[in-house]
Each structure stands twice: as C-alpha cells, then as structure tokens.
Image (cartoon, rainbow over all chains, first blue to last red; front, side, top):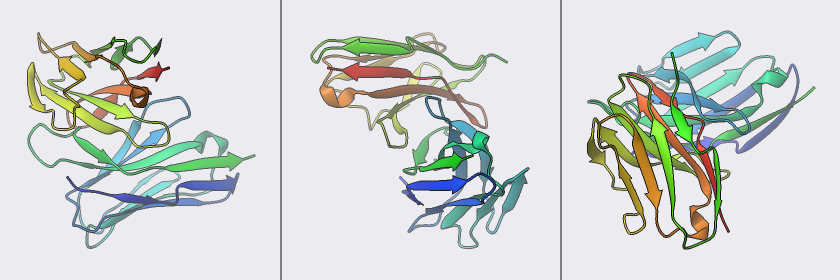
Length: 114
Length: 110
C-alpha cells in the first residue's frame, strides 16, 4: 500500500499562533484524507483531496494537495484551545468499495497553550 | 443519524485470555473495517468486510485474531489468546463515500 510520512510529530503553540502539519510520500498519491482525533476520542474525517494542486478551506483550516500529488499539508490559522488533538493524514485505497481502507500517517500531536 | 456503535468501551484481561469486541455500523453501510490503534500511532487496518464477506484480511494476525460479520450488519472481532502487545484501541469503522469511526474499545492486556 501507499505509505505516508507525517511531520512534525509534536507541535506546541500559543493560542492564536498558526500551525501546519505536513504529509509526504515517495510515490504519487491517488488521494489524501485528513482526520482529527481529540484526546481519548476517535478519528473524525475532515476532508479528502484528490486533484493535483487542490486547495480547500474549512473556516480556519486550509488543506493543500501538492502539484505532484506526493505531499499535502494542513494549516490552521490562529489556533484555539479547541484545536487540540492529533491530526492524521491518510491515503484511501482507490476505487471500488474501499473508501475506508486507509493507510494512516503517524500523526501530529497539537497542543495549544492558552 | 446514529453513528458507529462499539462495545465494550474498555476491557482489561490477562495475557492468554480471550476477548471479543462488538461493532454495529451505520445503517446501510455495506463496508465495515476493524482497525488497531496502538498508543502514539495511527490506526492500522486489520480487516475489511463488504456485506458479510471478507475483502481484505491480509494484516490480520490469523493465528490469534478472528472476525466475522455473519448477517452483513454487526461484526465481532475476537482475540484468542491475547498477548501483551495486543494492548491497543480497536476501532470499528464503516463507510459510504466517507469513513465514520466508532468510539473504539480500549484493550489492556496485563
């Protein structure tokens, strides 16, 4: 399956600062999904990107898919304490009924200090 | 819309004992997955069902893990006998265009 490396492993920010996590692959990705997992919680789907150079926004969150489809990023503007959690990128096995057959990155743990 | 249901939420067992986890996916979702999430790591796929058939169980340690989805709805994941390294959160997920995870069962093997 397609492997993804995610950096950084940890990120500590002051409330109001920006945050970015990166997901990289040595091979071309068919798609990339982003999930958020609150402490003690389960992964929650945020977004899926499929097109080269795609950029999507959700309020303070901006998601990008690289032109070569080998990397992706999630950027949070002006973090809030509610943004605390682990952010995972994941690649879905393309096609058929395997939307949820995911290979996850290692995740970035975000801590926001008030 | 009800989410993916799992039980129990927590389980503590001794090594070499057996344990079973139950999952009820979102109504109408034909595809069901079991993932294992070890502390500090991303979830890892164990098995994928399509209705009551297994699509992919290549990462399931079949010497000790088994799973079934007899009627194409609920699913059960069993571990027998458990090892210390099986301590993890077991997540059930179902999908229909996007993936929904259940709350998970946190297993501690002592």
